[in-house]
Length: 128
Image: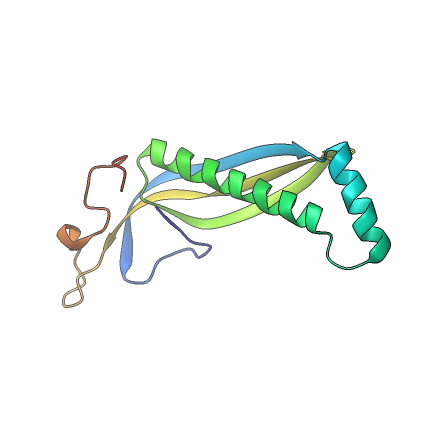
């Protein structure tokens, strides 16, 4: 699955738009994590407890986005973005979203597609 933040992929053309895909996760910080972070805040610098939580949360949202796109038959997601909101005290939602598409490579010589050389030549949903 190719996931990009751009609206197109150089050397490929979109042959089908499948729609918006998303991955959503909601996380809270634990009491133990908050105590650890409070100690780090006291000494200053990077708050690694929260950095790790943020990275894990974004990765989970990304994985859910990819899963959703695969279920729709996509082989790529264009214009991928993240959004995050605090929905309650110490509770944050992270949303990964983009446009699910089917892309195929362009032939270098004439601009037509060459599906046989595509890394996505297998049927949609086939795992690699």
